[in-house]
Image: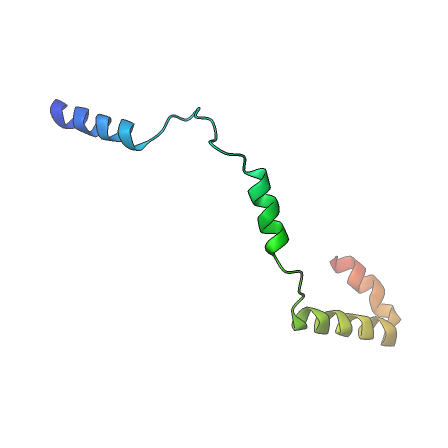
Length: 71
């Protein structure tokens, strides 16, 4: 059993790098690139929901406290 444990220990040491290893590259520029690639398009149902809420507030102003309560 000891031989198997040693084999497993060696395999684990080979496959896992140390926890205190330095990053090989800076991740911040990559994150900024990914954020720039995202489109800022808003789906149509978000615009519809905004229009419905606005219409509700215009037609029934007494719903404003109700809306603020749920925010």
